[in-house]
Length: 450
Ligand code: PFF
Image (cartoon, rainbow, N blue to C red; front, top):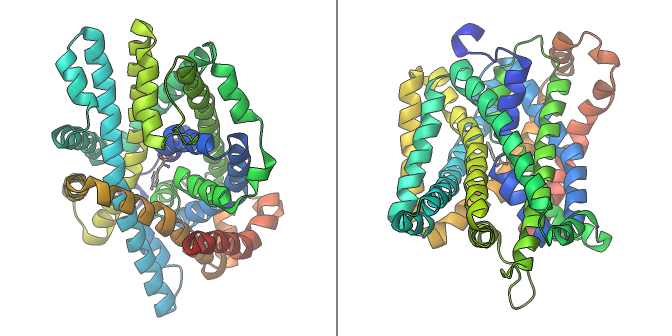
């Protein structure tokens, strides 16, 4: 069965693919801009704590359930229990997850399209083609539609190729490119005047703010979104892992890469904002608060690049190229969740499933674009603020309470015969049973009650 459903051929391939899913706009755009508007280092600190203590255990729940079943989320959760109700609720959770993954993709493709558009705009600027430059950086329905469709076509193209030739091969190419681009940009921006002030904001915590409930809610959302949790993408990637792999180890690597890239992106974006301020670009509104996240990326940074002349245009192309790659390695994982379901549960051929489901998602994106002001924010908060943590709780409960302890241990032992004596086995089972659901629930309730 494993051969017919596809499998990652190496540990490197898996870590690149899963880290590729995790590292995305959430890391390079969401994390630094949220850190900037939530007290800099205080946000960083809370984010780090939550990522290790909540997001990593939740990621492990998904990887273990997925690898155990070697199947899509719906089948995996359905097969964990022989009790009809629990089994049906598991299947329902799997389907809800893939609907959420598809909805996330529908807004993600719009933003990713903007990244490609801005990259192209900078190139046109450099070549002196003013009309193309201003068209691709101005907000218009045709521009939004065109670049969203282009991005969706790239995503569908990779997913059509399957696990090894599509997801793994492309992640192995794109992720190192992303890392190198990010480090080069970071090193360059840190040499500019004003960067040190940004660095100070990023690194000196205001502990007062670290305990504010709003900040904790925002950081939990960021950590869950960043590790692609709840919606079955990590579960499906786990299901393509060979049995010989040591799960806590590879899960740990994915978490570390994800956090590392987010933290690096902070070293790029916060200093860049203050460099922009140094060059006379507004980054605070007249009331003293920081400009909104999209203004920072789509107005402040381009204005900064514009103040830098020709090198600025080059930096801008590289920056938006980086954003587009990060988005692509994440979007493929979102599309894989419903596509794997369609293949395994309904016997649809991969290429057809990818184009059909990708097509529907593109239609939803187009719908969002038609009433952008109302729908965009709504879909973002419904999926990331509410559905992801809720699904995260259910997945922890399935791993902790429904999956039998013995099955858990056997799963871990396949990749590490001494798993029983390790630290992970001493802590994780009770942690994922009690601590994770309770804390996520507490933060979630608080965020709903406002
Ligand atoms: N982790 C991605 C990011 O940080 O941008 C977003 C994401 C990918 C969310 C895949 C959900 C998902 F299933």
